[in-house]
Length: 344
Image 1: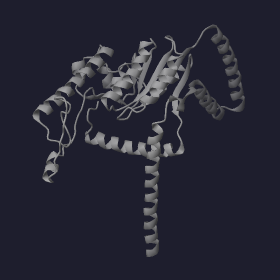
Image 2: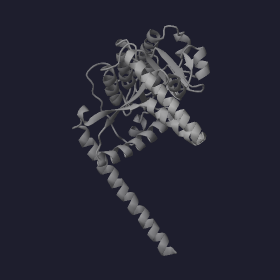
Image 3: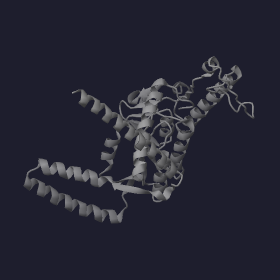
Image 4: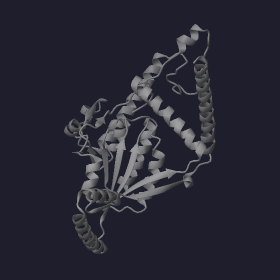
């Protein structure tokens, strides 16, 4: 028994070392490949959502109906499809392009979103519609500013943009959502958090205690306001707060421009509202899930899911998997401790 325990411990240590080596090697591979990558390494995938719903419908009818009823149903459906095809040659059906954005602290999916929007804009017309299924608790200001700018491209082309929020669109997430012509949200989706937070630790006293000197040289009075290792000053703190407040003002102005019906001073306090309360505050336009919205459109609209896929080698996939797990863990900790700097 003692031998087995020792062997098990040895095996566990060995596996840990091997996994660590794989993660390090994969991370190096990812870093080296990232420098070589360009947009030609990815491609656009288009899925016809109408076909997916039709397949589900046929599957359920096959299981529920008896054989004669199912055959009759199929015959009627084929006749209707023939009539629809003839009608479609005479008048163009409306098209709905469905995009997805699952935001993290750095809004990293914006790199995919920009390609998806560019692809859709090559074909979409003002009579069409784009639906963005948005999920994001917010993150870094400049990252979500870029993501919002991508959505502005849709509005600039005069194409209706609908934003659907099933779980959360807070802070930077709401910065993106407010650009939509219409905002849909589930009854208990988290909406709002129009505010800016900045928090960082300072280790200066700890370093002084251990006789560690820090030299910080800048050119420009406000090149560095607060620092994690140097000694912070009241002047630096005041300037930092001014920058923070200015960012909040810009955020409020942006939201007001896109949703002028809002009482911005009332809702821009950093608070969040659940779906029904958000409707009362005019942060959203309708209580509805994305699934319900798509089902309501299938009868008279051609619906397409558009996704940008990036090619990755095996080392990259391993590296990105490890990086993703680490990023999710760090984001969770940062979110709980509220220690993110310049976040929305």
